Length: 117
Image 1 (cartoon, rainbow, N blue to C red):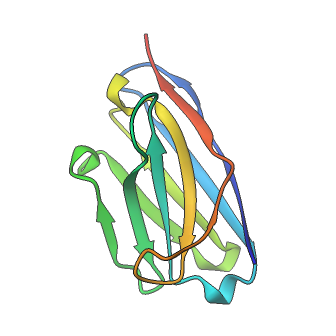
Image 2 (cartoon, rainbow, N blue to C red; image 1 turned 45 degrees about the vertical axis):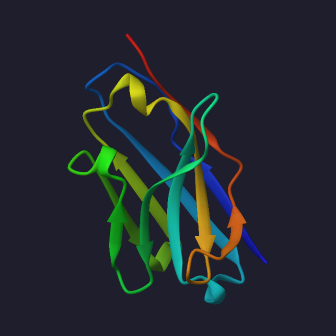
């Protein structure tokens, strides 16, 4: 099994920045990719960004140019740097690990990000 622990959410003003972290433990060798998803009230959970074990990344169109996903393999940790935040980015952000083809292995507990003045 894979366990994921997230940190770094909070309240930020529009235009501000936050960095989310997600540390993986357990059967980490089964992980092909890790990603960040978000779910706003009344909306479906959506992919924000994903990074594979080979370093390939993909982003939702709504965050391209503002968010950056990265990883520290030595720490089994993935980061999401979020810049130029907008109120529309307000959501619960979830870390995810998959074994390929978006087949989910585990979800984190979620961390709230609120963008408001």
